[in-house]
Length: 241
Ligand code: ADP
Ligand code: MG
Image (cartoon, rainbow, N blue to C red):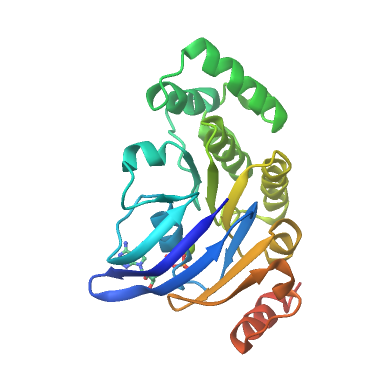
């Protein structure tokens, strides 16, 4: 993917939450956004997804400036997985995924179903296809959300702390599913606290604090941070690992 941020500012109620973000990367497969709570990671992800507006600056994803695109069309090419899965509780696993393909992408039910079954098999979820979200675990729900994001064949998949509400075993399952995405050559932007995982799968790291990009670079900055701020952050998150 190619991502360009040009002096992006975002305010909530007159409070600046993103401050002059500047970044230009290309030929990146997996970009990890890290940083303490409240640093603006989710906000930035929502801006990239075209889910929210911003006050000034430019964002370009794969050469599309998002203030110039038709947002409804643009969003069709972005898969989004939120912190807590947001599946419809009244629909089965398979219908949750087929719904998006049929309603947003106008796919035929029979075709959509076939594709979704293949994906569920690949992600080890086929035995759960007729269950409802409350009948599966949190980790399985997150994996269904990942399959749903993937089913629309997006250009880029954005994941916002997909493991933050999960215990370590379920976290492992979800991280495995993200690895499957990456092996599938999908472009991914991932907000995560899983620094070890970021080290393994991400080829680019962006570290944010208080609405600013403090440090960014190839994944080896996690081993050799250049700023005191990133070094202190890594010391804290890795202390009990
Ligand atoms: P992170 O994902 O890094 O934890 P967020 O992007 O969620 O950070 O939040 C960045 C800042 O913006 C925080 O100070 C947060 O309180 C504020 N914020 C986020 N969403 C909203 C909102 N919808 N309304 C007002 N303030 C918000
Ligand atoms: Mg967040």
